[in-house]
Length: 266
Figure 1 (spheres, rainbow, N blue to C red):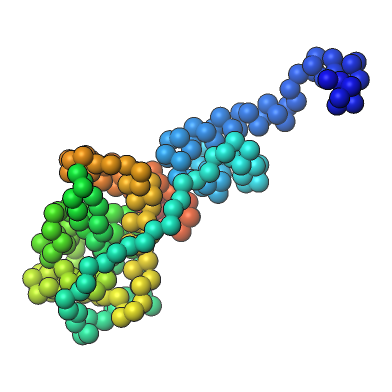
Figure 2: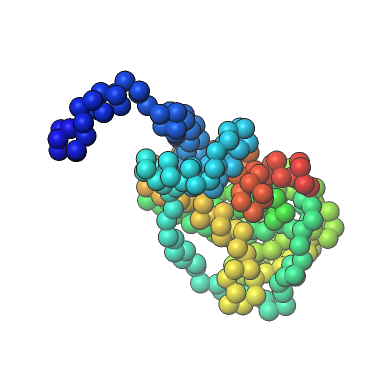
């Protein structure tokens, strides 16, 4: 083998006696930390977020080194392309404008956003309505039901209102789904001093934060999993909301979790 690789016998034995280099040993130490973090978040962090977590643990390492070790050990963050399907809207009210366009939240409970998505349990559709605080990306309320209607969305909002401060002047933004333009829903918001806001017609990224949350949730917990019962699906939602609020760091929040961002910045 020494002849094949054009290495002298003496050089080979010298290399064996020296053992692993300090650089290689450090790589192994860092890789162990990377694998621990990667496993703890179910493989959803790429090298930038892994690097930020290592920095928070006082591990001195460069981003390029983290990226190289992850690449060499096939540690690739899970991601997927998604296509969302929407039920046809029965009607919409042109009078409901995008009232948050150009407004930036400077603290919690100023702008909430919401949306509904489709999930499956035992080969049947379930509908998940979620409320997010736009300032911190924190999930403040949600509701799961067999029916997509105003009761579903209103239950999610009331869930949030029980835990958070709802004051007159709070903005609530959503897409133009039928459940959000129902008089029952609109009247409840109005009676509680909430200013309703909706996507502009044909502008899908007006509610980008909610789209991003549903994308992350489905990629990280729903795809490739089957839920035999609604109870299993509900338990997964509860677990993920806790993880998302308390442990999942966001580059848009200076690599903080939603909970930490509210404490530090809000």
